[in-house]
Image 1 (cartoon, helix red, strand yellow):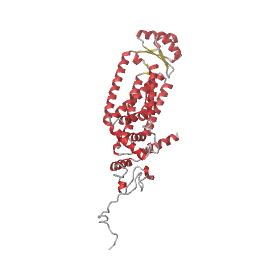
Image 2 (image 1 turned 180 degrees about the vertical axis):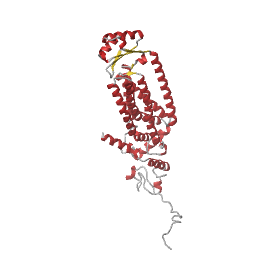
Image 3 (image 1 turned 180 degrees about the horizontal axis):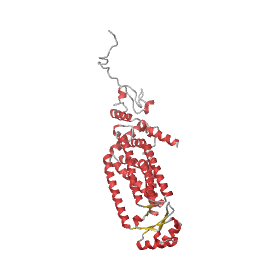
Image 4 (image 1 turned 90 degrees about the vertical axis):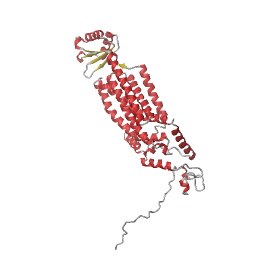
Length: 409
């Protein structure tokens, strides 16, 4: 744990960094693999929709009946002819859910369960839910999601740019697919609480992505005013600047959600608490992953299609190849913002160097520049990016005027 905290502190201070953008193809492959696994689980196992969506009946057998889950499932399936799902509640009672039942089938199933445990039919609670309510709720949920995505797209397009808006939508789609896939793999029942959880993670995923985008935009705003970093390198500096904050925020949010999931599954054995906790837990983790490893790398790929950005990157890479300079370390984001602004201004004021030294302020001042020793050959300073020329300002004639001379009359 100490090593992790030390690593996080070093990343935050800029002493070390990870090349998220440079290794984006690897993380794209990991993301595609997760999507394939999720879609496979969804296609093979499918989602177990609750009675709120399919219609059916829910029977609650009191704890005094001493009916096991296997016996309750067997009796309900034999009486109804449909699949049944049985959960043991925290009080010891059983919750038997059978989908696709009408009123007569529900009464017959209820009587069969009562005969099995030796109780009166009225002693077993029965709740019949029609499928129309579930269909209406599903339709409203999808309508709300579409409106949310449209508003998010418009907001991001105005606050940032359309490329970031598109990348954010891809990241949210990844979060939804992975969350639904995990739901299918673990076999949890999809209830209205699950829908609430899914809609909640969309907001959190957007929040985390916007935080990262804000820093990336701050870092890349000077991309055309400097000639040291490519667009991808500046974007990677932005991600490294907020990655510690993003992870800490996610862990802080995951811990209480994990507690809710454990209590809802282990102690209460179901209910709204568990239905909300699972999509929140999976969605929070997926949202953190997508905002760091998917959203910003996609923005970089989109921006590289811009002719101006592509030409700027080529000039920088060609200059590095000509001078034999390696790419800057990703940890360069630890430099102060004032230094970056000064570098940008210096790059703007400094002309491109050529073999004859034309346009080089250092050559004009008689100072040897990169790759240009006293004899014009290679020098030890050949890997330097810049040469600082001392500027001497004329002494002001008014300096000291009006100041006491120190002499006493």
